Image (cartoon, rainbow, N blue to C red; front, side, top):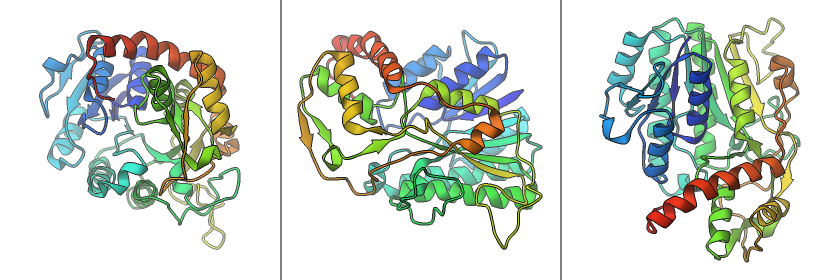
Length: 360
């Protein structure tokens, strides 16, 4: 199939693109390579896909030098004309939207980026999709949508109307927008609420990366909520496997759906929302201890209060996802952290030795 993967230079998009290309799909990667974190890491991910930095020109499709079935375009989701042109020329079977302005805490600093990318950009994709016969439109939501909800584990049948950050609100908005287009234009849409994704080539603003970097530099780590946090850490390979299994399974109408007792995760329209998480929340202090064990160092810890927009615990209920795909994430933190540390030592430390001022 011909598949558009937005956010292809990002963490999940890179891994997914590599997997899809290996399976013989024709993939077009899309990313604006913004500076939310180091663009060097993003360009190096693209190089792994055969796209060299010096060959990239804005709004122009670039062929991979290594994979004949991968192309890349650097552009903004907010650029409607480029999106429209791409859809007209390429006739996609599948769209997987992983592009977004990420980060809960950053949304307090620059809220407009979240509206531009996560709302306007998402609308541009939906608008182009309505004029083309897509088999499936898959998009990244987030566990952040659960906000102030304290029911555990988080279920897609829960109310998610009390977001704790603009990032969370933008992701909930995506789900509402997708449902509208599924209803009005019969576009099969699936939203995926990711739970704390980690692994090799991960984001430098995430806890695992920040902790490992600080520990290896003999610097203290910031531990929020005085360590009383739990996260449903989910390894990147499990996330990619879940997406791949969903691609050939577009949602259909839930024939027993009723407006008098509405199920938020399904609809009379071809619409679904799933959690993808390990369904095994890990205490933050246990997570830190595992990093210490893998690195052979003990971290100096700055114990701090919880940050605005953050929540103390996440936990994914994934029974419906398992029933739909016959897959449950299975990589535990011991294996996952080991894989990340191996990658970090082989890649990032070597780069920092070559360039000591390399930004994170």
